[in-house]
Length: 500
Ligand code: NAD
Image (cartoon, rainbow, N blue to C red; front, side, top):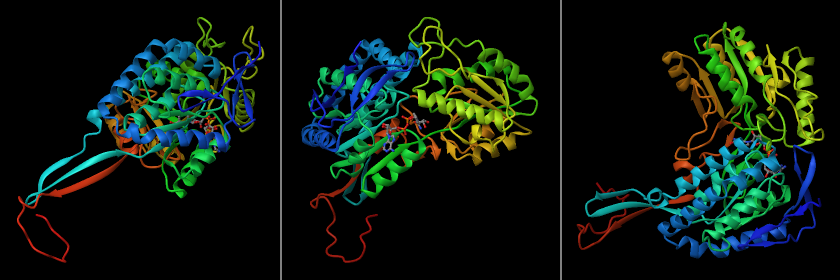
């Protein structure tokens, strides 16, 4: 079958790119090219930003209540098309349908949060900050905002951004990953069907040229980014240098501490799901277990027994629990990291190299892999593998586990498995990581809380969605007012005014 040709979405309609460059989109389970996506040029991105800029004044002046009604219709359409979007995500990413459906649901929850925007945009008010003087604050939109998203959540990560930005009165240019462009293009069509005016949401699949155009564009006020740490740092630095507000979420190396007093069967079930779900291609995947004291000996056989039973195959087939990884190049990188783990002396308890998925021999598969007795200086600890590889480090004490995690450059998510409230409370207080689970392996905050890591997992100050998302997409204005007939006339003063 010839590869379907995709398009850009600018000013409420499909447009052909001016750029002649394209990229292949694969079905990672079969290794086949299914679509060709245009890579937006500078001129294409300029056209999208111009459409967003033209749509901004009217959208800004649309009342939050009317914006919320359009978001509510969008939410209903997303519900109605949930399976279609999950199928597209599974086809281009490789994840299982059940997993893709769950991630669509988590994205829809951000739209639900954004539907409350009339309430979320309420500022503060104080009467009589001085005699006859009142003060209130306004949360006003930034203008044209841009989002740059990774391959691993084709629906959910774009939804962390544009519903909140648009609810707040901004217009938006989304640059999805060129590896998984179809879901973003489809969501833009659904949003239009829900009543979104043309130009409020534009989608420009592309690569570095498109990203650089957004980072340098004088009409873009804010940039949200999710992806790997080197690109996040580059986006943050370049955007900030060009006077934009930037939130840039980066990579991760998420540790789970297992204390000797944990329920080991429960912990093993949770860890296997968190490590191998979505073939480990989740920014909140647990990739590292830190086993304290005798926890290691108890846990290892339980992890291995579960991991070796995982059914690997194409994500849309019945009974499959884990799909392929995103590309042949990514599979080869994962395999070379497994090779390095063996060469550097880690104990390979389960080897996923060379796995063939029956009937899909050209797919990009790596089987579940488990390493024991990994040391912090090994590459499999130092690198973000982003694949179905779980490594176990052994330490003597709770304190050593915390020291290890706090010394790691990343700080996205972490978890502790314990039956002791004391250790859980210490961990919550002491750990230098943005999202913490207590007997919860993947502590992804719900939409009404904010999502974001610390250290090399986030460049910028504000996390995504929740109230931090609202603050990112709005500028605060504080108004101090006095009506002279009511106020005491104080005459001229050149001294710093004090109101009290
Ligand atoms: P990536 O950094 O390669 O790409 C992310 C986006 O940046 C894509 O849209 C891509 O087109 C663009 N891009 C890539 N290289 C660029 C360059 N040199 N200059 C400008 N733009 C560039 O990331 P990915 O491989 O798509 O996604 C996987 C990574 O994303 C992992 O590191 C994962 O941990 C991370 N991630 C983090 C979170 C989080 O919340 N912290 C969530 C999901 C994924």
